[in-house]
Image (cartoon, rainbow, N blue to C red; front, side, top):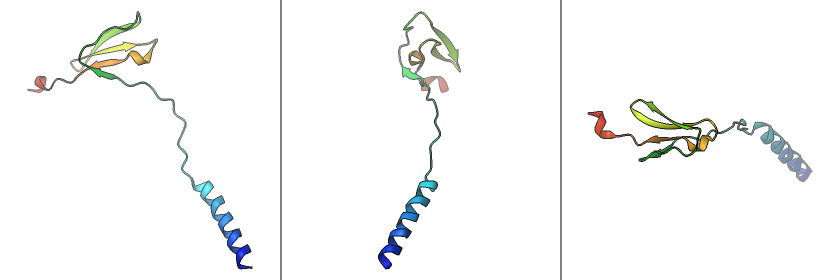
Length: 77
């Protein structure tokens, strides 16, 4: 009897664990900026922008082309 009881309890625990699992939401990841010392336009739709004193390359056709300048510590002082 104890074997049947322990089997039932263990199966119940696995069902409860399945309900209590943390599920990560499905999100669409976006490409971040590459940090480079020299920026260049990689295609016809790439363009330069300046944000907070730093040059950025933006591209609406291919998000992998996004890049920004390295943060210059000398400009802080």
